Length: 560
Image (cartoon, rainbow, N blue to C red):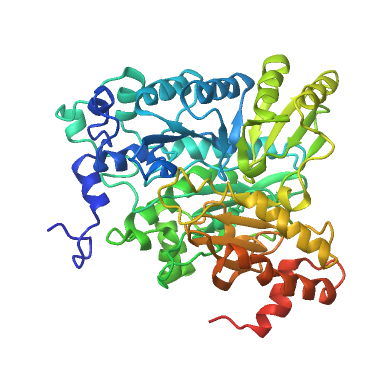
């Protein structure tokens, strides 16, 4: 029996896999080359995650047989693509996936519905446009998030470059990715360099679980920075970036019925200057590597280390690794989160256009062919494309002369620049859930738009009209659309049933709380009606729904 470091518990199966094949190669290359196989083994399915791939099946078709397919997620630091890279992703989606592109809540693109025969072609196509999928999933640092709006800060470009630096510094060094997806061969696990491979940063067993990193520039918290394992809050003094406040130990995943799992907001540890960024990022990751739980994957995130050992302990451990003191945190304040829509000036005089993408899915439907419009715009005008943490999209660096043409193309494809979505829709997020995600317990992306329409009708009924309320939904408790920070959060519990959470805030600095469990679809409006009616009558001037819940509702319903 292989034991954990403290010798008390058996390591999880995932840990044993990493110990056995630290190159993360598995038997992926050989299986990929075998046309008789439509899927990979369960063990190789775990290795695939480190390569940015999830093996899934179409759950709408399970009554007849399992139809295996793959989700591929790009590693796109800060969510920034050139026009040519966007066009490459667009083409790959049409040729090998389900003709849609899904913007993730971590500023990346996901392909859905890829069959095994097309998997290698998608991966090579991504590599050919100078992007990759390495470490987009798995027990490593995931896609690094950064503020996407180019007009909100004078040093936004510097923060974006810092995000790229952290992404590069925290990449695993295995040769398996290049061998399998670029060279098209199975990595020789018996070669000395592979047999004895140990990643210089991650070691032989990588991290106990995933590790998420994000940057934010106050007062805008568009990346939900406090929900990350590693949060980097830019500090401005006298108009320049003087450093970052370090936030550690955020994370939203939990399991229904398991009180030892819970969402958590990060602790602000202190401040450091910009030249120390990579050292600090590596140091935080190493504390997770060395102290995270490798026996219970549900308890393996860095947030549990912080919760159980405390801020002072963590700061001391970090300082041991970086060799310098972390300074006292500098003052900062977040005021809001979310995106800008429509045309806005950049600091350099050019324009950017914020486009609402319902539930993050870029697709063509009758009367609104957004995907075709974006393709034509990219081909004609070549703007930079930025994916936002709220699953929307920006067209950036548009000149004065090109702006009317961009607007006209969108209009021709049924996309209005002036009127985009609804107030609730623009403030909403949803995870993909069914039919692609194997963890989904209930619908999310396919269901939320209709539910928002019903809630909008209820709000008109109780006199709230066009009031903005942040609504987020996930099909399971893992929290990919960050529902635990929403003013109203729906978390799938079973088919047609959701746990209802209330009380997040506009700045995305406060967790909401569980209000009702297992609310049936047909009962959602009945649950919300008395709450929204009271809020309409009792709110103070300018008070948002989440703040009213915190001020009034939670005093009546103390936390359990």
